Amino acid sequence: MHNHGGGVSAMELVSFALLAAIAVYLLAALRPAGRPIWPRRRIVLWIAGCLVAALSVQATATNHDDFARHAVAHVGLGMLAPLLLMLAAPGTLALRSLSAVPARRLARMLRSRPVRFLTYPVTAAVLHLGGLWLLYPGGLYPSIHVNGLLFVLVYVHLFVSGYLFSASIAGIDPAPHRASFGTRAVVLCAVMAGHSILSKQLFGNQPPDVPVAEAELGSMIMYYGGDAVSVALVVLLFAGWYREAGRTQRRLESRTQKSSV
Image 1 (cartoon, rainbow, N blue to C red):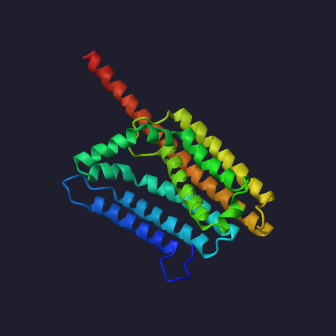
Image 2 (image 1 turned 45 degrees about the vertical axis):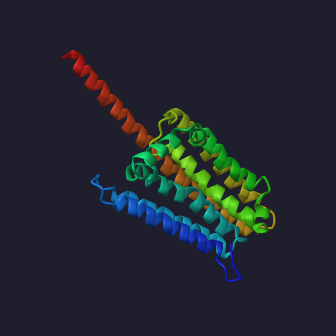
Image 3 (image 1 turned 30 degrees about the horizontal axis):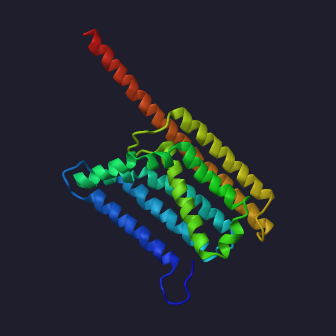
C-alpha cells in the first residue's frame, strides 16, 4: 500500500478513484436536463460513502499489521461504505443521466443472468460471509501482509461483496428479478448470525502473529460495528416491505372500486 520509489502509491490511486466517483456522481446529479431535481440526501449519502471508504483504506494503509485497524476497515469498507453508496441509488442516477442507447444497454446488463446471479441474496451472502470465513479461520489473513497483490484483492473483494449483499437485501435501484421478502429476511438473519459467530471466534482464537489485546479489540469492533450496520439493513428491508405492501393494497382497492362502478 505504500510507495518508497517516487511513484504513485495505492492510497493515492484509491483517493483519486474516490474523488473521480464523487465528481462523476455530482455531474450526473446536478446536470440540468429538464428532469426532476435529484434528492440531496442521495448526494450526501454518496459523498459520505466515498469518505468512509477512503478513511477505511487509510486506516489499514498506515499500519496494515494492526488487527484493530484492519477491523475498522472491515466494517467501514466492507459494510458501512457499501450501504451508504447503495442508498445513493447510483444505478437509478445512471439510467436517468445516460442517453437512450447507453441507458438501454445498462438496463439489459442489469437484467442479464450474471448480474441476476451475483445479486441474488444467497449468492451475495456466500461471497460476503464466505470470504470472511476464508480470510480468518481459513488462514488467509497472514498472507495478505506479505503479498501486496493479495492485500489489494482481499480489500476489493471486501468492498464489492459488501455492496452486492447490501443491494441484494435492501437495494433501491431497479431490480426486475428481486428476491422475495422472505428469502431476503432469512438470508439477512443467517449472515448476521454468521458474522457474530465469526467475531466471537476471533475474540478467543486470534489469527497467527496477532497479539491477544489487538485480536480482542478488533473482534469487538467487528461484532458491534457489524451489528449496527446489520440493524440498519433490517430497518431498510422492513421499510421497503411496508412500502410495497402499501402499494399492493392501494392497487387492490383501486381495482375493487373500478369493478364496483
